[in-house]
Image: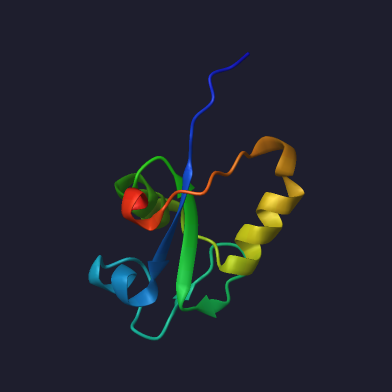
Length: 89
């Protein structure tokens, strides 16, 4: 059995991504890496918040709808655990 990597889901606001000078992020939105809609938040699965930010810089993040679709379509590949907010920051 292969080693499992525990991933957490991280959320970044467009304003936060703008401060990190991420792509097209502005105070009023950022593009989803899947559907290309401008949204106020992006989500990404990663081991740490820093890794999540690097993933968004390199590949983009997903809007809530695309993230939910990905999790449902690939449900057999993902194990998602609830991580309390204070532990995930």
